[in-house]
Image (cartoon, rainbow, N blue to C red; front, side, top):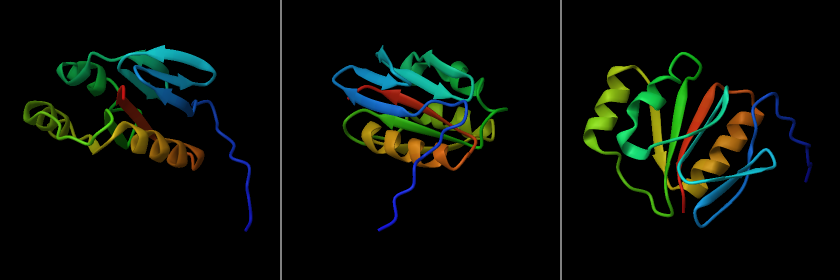
Length: 117
């Protein structure tokens, strides 16, 4: 087996998570969070489409972590994001964190919106 060291550019990987928090780039953030090319910002959850739409010029895909279990996005939010032309992938927050880190290490144009577990 060959092991390669992962090198991240300016974006910060998700280093850990727990009940109500995420650790990103050595800092702990509580509550819903967006991690993207411009850094971290608090997120108002499914009712906060404006913060997600602000990412659309910088990314190709938005991953949405829905907490400890996978769930559907509210229809209105999904429609708003799709009408704006954003690629959206929904999964449980732990899977979203892992997927984000892998694609981030490949230099992809991605962002991550997370609800805590």
